[in-house]
Amino acid sequence: MRARARINLNALKHNLQQVRQLAPDSRVMSVIKANAYGHGLLKVAGALGESDAFAVASIEEALQLRKAAVTKRIVILQGVIDRDELILAAENNLDMVVHCEEQLRLLNEVELTGGVDVWLKVDTGMHRLGIHPARVAPVYAGLEQSANVTNIRLMSHFANADNPDDGLTARQLQILSETAGDIKAEKTIANSAGICVLPDCNLDWVRPGIMLYGINPFQYGRQCSCVLQPAMTVSSRFIAINNTGKGESVGYGGTWTCPKDMSVGVVAIGYGDGYPRHARTGTPVLVNGQRLPLVGRVSMDMICVDLSDCPQARVGDEVVLWGDGLPVEEVAECAGTIGYELVCKLTERVLFEYYN
Image (cartoon, rainbow, N blue to C red; front, side, top):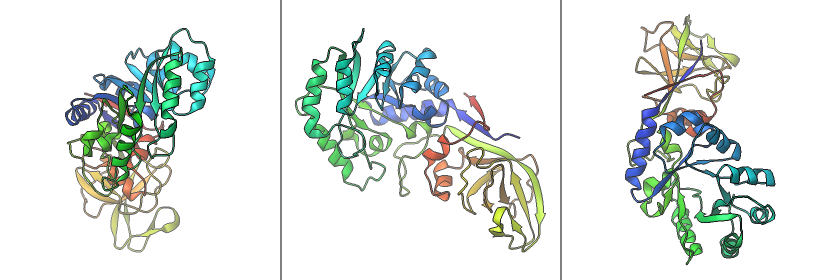
């Protein structure tokens, strides 16, 4: 018995159209790094073919797309770090982010047969990758003078856009505008959360990520301003239903004890499949459309479910762990993490199926 992850390709297309409606004057760079947030890089790239560009984290991800005959603009968000990667980027018509001055020096040291398009990253407050605003002008000038650089665009990244009450987001947008000054270059800063709450941040390009997969980009219970459809539904089945007596414990460590005589269902999924080990008792699952609580510890291959309110459950019944009808964000909160992590951490034991 294998757990399944069903990927709704039409949901991906729908979510991309939601981005278009929120940012009608911007081009869309769809972020498909980390195996398209765990959904499958090549399948997702095909479904999101109406994007204007794709963004990935590394050159390895970019080359997978090129080898699959994906011809759209591809931006390497981490840029390149050595001569070999730079040559590969140029040979495969890949855009690179320049986020440190060492990358500018690399561009000037290597002789390329063709130029590369560059996205100069400005550190407006994330303090992770990017050029300090005071150094942007000279670095930009250096890129203009480089024989290996074809076009230059400006980029930054929001740190706290998922919390709309945090004033840093508006300050970052202002810093990018002030830093750009008279530079006539296309700009991008908007991620999923920014697209949804701050129309002024959409600029020439937007970079949706998590919202493309139908996952709410906000924290603190705030809902997205558009209607997103979950692209991934993870399910498995009951492999046993046990009649367990009052006072008997369930699972490793005996951390949960039956408060009464009851039925407990055993589902074939665990942390070996990517289900979060720290999901607490009470984490919901769906059985025939009915919410039921997980009980006891998550083990490598199995979880247990309280069937007190679902006496009709049978061995072989499908159990939805997250997705259609049960937001992954809710499950993630019960495990003390975020939806991003759950969809990215499914293992090779899970069978992926694509439809629509």
